[in-house]
Length: 99
Image (cartoon, rainbow, N blue to C red; front, side, top):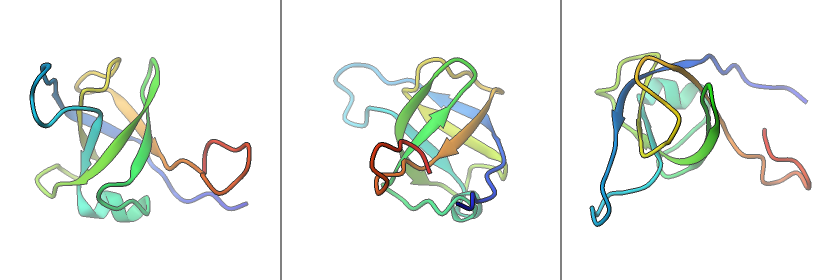
């Protein structure tokens, strides 16, 4: 099985929401070029692996995010300036969790 090139990304912004806000939940924003490199599209789910834990988040394309960076929303255990990796879940393989 061939794995695609998936360089790490630096967290350049963090958005924390409060209960009752209309836009809530785990989200990761990255540029079009970074999303294309990882074969990600808007609305897809992706595992966000941080230094302490990992969570599923929705992908949002935002070309204001600098190359090599991501902005995360509502993902516990991740702070600005830390390094993360994005991994697509492998939903086609029985028993497999990751691509």
